[in-house]
Length: 310
Image 1: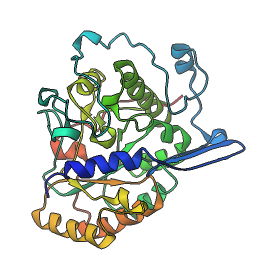
Image 2 (image 1 turned 90 degrees about the horizontal axis):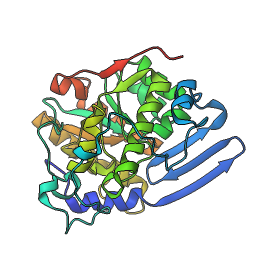
Image 3 (image 1 turned 90 degrees about the vertical axis):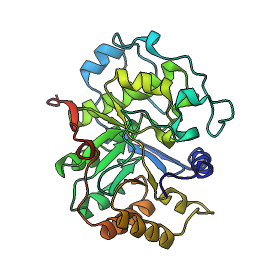
Image 4 (image 1 turned 45 degrees about the vertical axis):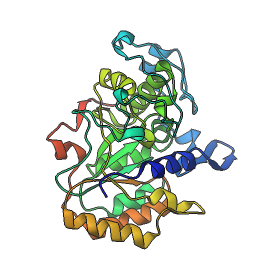
């Protein structure tokens, strides 16, 4: 299977949009949205840096809806006037917009596959990620949420310590084509600032939540220097924590064995919760450690810039 059926993509969109649990306690903020664990303890967050206070006028990390902060290098005139659309509502989406989630459309600078079958993980860092990090013997690529990055800085730094490649997955996992230009910019800028403050680097690679990307979103992310990364193999691990999984765990492993025979591709997986982490560990045992990071797949750089953390 080269790319997931669009109907399955829409099911994933609906599933992730469902709030399946909320838990709060003193000094912490815990919220689970689908398979995405937006969890953290305010006392252990990445400190809000002075340079970001000076620039934004804020003194703490935002919630799920980050504020738009204008940036001088973003040229709004370069953003095409494609209409916004909601998750799964593709009938009026023009093919000229090159939507991946609606039409599986890739632009030449999008990364959609790899010369070696390689795992990628979305939605961390989470406490569950630590189990995966401890298990992996190869470098892998993790696309992180900004809100999880600042809430789990110790896990993020474990990714760095083990030399994994880290890319952006937005601030809080919103479906970007449904947002205004300013809201998309906010999702990207705050995710980058979270990585700046926590890991001392500026990302090169970006995976849009739900694969939600068209030329309007691309026109914004490109101005940040980001390059979009999609996939050609969906593990459907995210559906295992639903009441009606699309595939059983054994069916997932069977697919992976078939993909291993072909030997190529980017595999979409998730490390936001322990259930999908356990599957990821087993998938890694099937594929083995002869894998590449996204940067290695295309002969690119790991990060646009690295710098010391204050």
